[in-house]
Image (cartoon, rainbow, N blue to C red; front, side):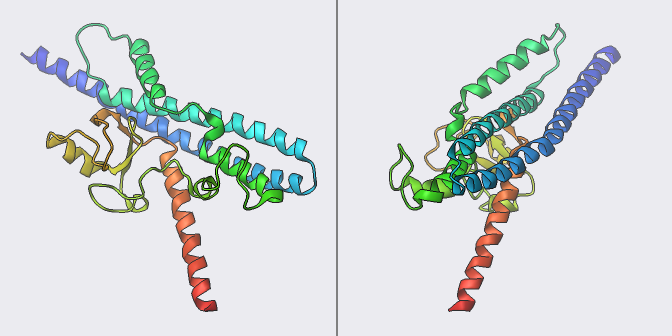
Length: 247
C-alpha cells in the first residue's frame, strides 16, 4: 500500500516538474521573440527609407530577410506551444514512455492547425504595406482588393479583443491563454471553470472548435502581442485626445 502511494507521489512530482520546466522554457523564449519583433520594426523603417531613396532592390532584400525572421519566430512559437501542451497533457504510467514520439505527435498536431503562409503573416504584410505606401499610398497592393487596405492596417494575430466569458479586454486579463485549436484567447481561470462544467465548444460565437484544457497555452508570443495591443490603444487614446483639444 505504501509502495503504491509512494509511486503515485513520485509520478505526480515528475509531472509537476515537467510542467514547470515547460513553463520556464516558454518564458525564456519571450525575450528572443520580442527582439525579433523589434528588429523587424527597425528593418521596416530602413526599408521605407530605402524606397524613398529609390533603392527598391535593397528594400526587397530586407523584405526577404523579414520573411525569414518571421518564419523562424513562428517555428519557435510552434515548438514552445507544443512543449507546453505536451507537459499539460502528460500523465505518468507504469510502462515506458516514449517522450520523443509523444512530443513529435503534439508538434505535428499543432502545426496542422497553423497557417504556414509566412508572407501573409500580419507582421510581414504590415512591412510590405509600409514600403508600398511610399509611392502608392491609398492604392491596394498587387493581388489585393481595396478593402484589404483597411484590413491590413488593423490585422493582428489576436483574433478576439475581449474574453468571451469574462467580458474583459484581453489587455486586462490576469492570466491569458490561447487555444491551440482556434487561436482564441481567454482568461485561464474562467475558461477552466467553463470546461469543468462539461461545456467544451469554444465560447466565441460561431466558432465550432472543441476545446481541451491541455491545449490552452500561454504561447511565448501571446504576451508580446497583448503588449503591442496595449501600446496601440494608448496611441489611439492620445490621438483622440489631441483631436478633441484641436476641435
